[in-house]
Image (tube, rainbow, N blue to C red; front, side, top):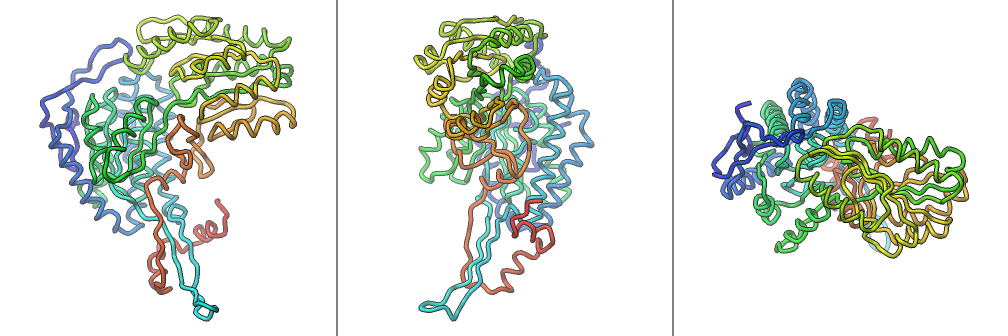
Length: 518
């Protein structure tokens, strides 16, 4: 593609900045040949101007056209799948089977969010008819529905070059909401992100979408992101990354005259509670399941398990040995980029001073094996740093004498995206639920946290610091709500309201009005 290396200011390509950088192959730390031009301050300002103008036009486009635009994007992606998969693997070091899964997820998200708009679910239309004869005061008619908030900035995530980047859920849900989008591409997969942006723009042009509906800006430092989030034309921000990165963005936003929402998904250790009843019945099977989850793509998931609170019993040693064996026999896996592997090794070294290392994973360059550590409940309670996320394949076992010690540890936990509970007894499940619901956004019974279903019933976001706003989700139909706000129309005629809703007066929409989410 001729656009590689340049910024997309709507339909125009631009490479005015003098600062260039290169994508890096994480398997050998060698740069690719294409220079990418970091967006200049002038290019960022032009993108903001275009995005604002595009929003004003896009929000007035008939809903049917918005739906058709969203539905056409995955068709274009599938027609260019080979090129997208190539760059995904080349820039991330992730295997092709992972790329295939993530590609399918990205395509589905555009289709799924289109359906949320088409059925009327995303607009959340609420009707309350007038009663002019009510005493002592007449009752007005009210119609409430969601409208888009304005231009949205989305930061590409390092660990999901498709599903949480230019082809990701933040972009798809913002477009579905009726917002224009400015993507700040992640510097470690600029080829993947740029190709993705060009394909979306091709579809946008084919469907007559306004110039600026999507802008795609390149940068390897913080200056572009800072200018974006502090500009008054931006009305919301989506971010997936580290706690440090999310809090830095929040600090910049706090300096704005007009506050806006930052929807940041940040750090999580995704604890697992392993009860005595589960350990006695299926210690080996659970060990294999948890090990596979930790091993998945070198643990580079926001939902990768990092902590296991386990009731020690006669089966504990066998469980621990099975996990250690799985780790030691695993192949070394490539981390996403040199920066992530460097941080991983730093965190592993820091953590080693706080725990007993059961198995120290081997490493070579950016390739790693998982590490297994353990502590007692008393050690965990005495040092809160033990619970901090280590992004990568690393698992810490917390040995507890019984349910009371596990509950004490759970009370100390920071907010998490997920918690898992392995148990065979209903009384145990009931006893732990108050602790787990207080600490996480999703609770998994007898299963691992990796694998986030895209569903209208999904919650991907939890108490701080796992995310900045636990009321919202970044996955599923409700993700669209992050980029909308409700407006009530009072005393408007029924004919006027009907015209506003004529696109969704169908059987499917009526199901939603009746609470049947089919």
